[in-house]
Length: 312
Image: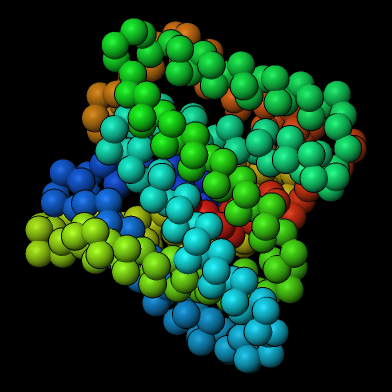
């Protein structure tokens, strides 16, 4: 392995680890006075400010001025509606179910994107994609069913599945614009749109309670914004050209594994053997989607999935 590829591998793994820690940071923030509304509003406002600072420092503000109004509106709209909804579902689910379970439920999105791409005529159905879909759905059934009667929060699982579905829609919708805007500019637009809509929504619902946050709570929210948003996205895009989209997407399967391990170490969360087997099937589906010589799950969605993770 060349030094460039080796460094790219480490960057992609580090990115996945940063994303994987997000659910842990969220749980810890809840323990320190954060509500879902407070968490989302602060996270996106903080991340948007950092991304815009990066854009200004890189001297790429001209790209924003040169972009068409349609792309600017679409970028902001993706954050205000698509990613705001996905993040809302994700962190609402996190209030009700374990971080480890939620990470495996969410990670069905690659198979959902593959199935949707076929349904929309963007891709053709192949044996590899069909196998990945079967593995993902079978794994999800084991993950959910292995919890045992009376121990599973059905609403929490449903919210997690909604997050996966909305996220998949977001990835497919953003496929075009991501090729026209720099990742940093698109991330800044998405985070800005999400920050505005989520702050307004949290205020109207009485969920924006900044005064209830402890100092530690502010720290965990800053960790979500800096580590699991800006750092994770930056590391992914630094590693992506070094290893390629297929390898990057495979390395990203470290994400739910990191969440499961951290959830055990921090909260003592455990998965049953049936759930572990289900999680293995979900991850196997991602590997199947990116195996073989044929073109994998559209490279664009693989890249957008990480750019989009600015709100994951």
